[in-house]
Image (cartoon, rainbow over all chains, first blue to last red; front, side):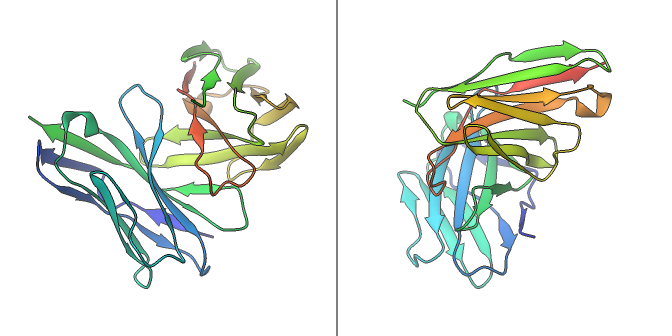
Length: 114
Length: 113
């Protein structure tokens, strides 16, 4: 069964600085999808960024980018120029190409200091 | 904008009660999901549905059932609530091809006493 591990329960970053959240996963599949979701306090979970495993290029969405290392099964999220609004719980998730299910990690709480 | 709504933000029930959690989406999505969120465990899939009247078990279906009579509505049922079902419950929906993102509701925090 696929598993997703987020080894950092909590992280802190100073406003305007850069922070990287870690995620590793375990799968025997060669084709799959990876996601980072953000859950702000008392607000709905939203998609931050998505990566297709067959694409070598790392995905980027404005201040958010990923470092996808397929051989190492690593999928980290980098947030540049951190803002107070980035404070949230971040979840890494995995999806096989043939199913509808997402497998989530335990989450990382990101705190942003002003 | 896709909107996923859940019937309650907070719910308190007694042990043994039958509990209904309702989820409605307004974007004609084929897939709907129920997750349970617990600290340190992330989100775990309880059930999902890929069409009206169709359902599949997720990773932790024990103690739960679901109903999808209309495409836009997906209900989670706790037949006899127990204290270990105290949790945050999240509903989500997506297009049929779930390489598209899942859209989440605001969650229902259920406390069973």
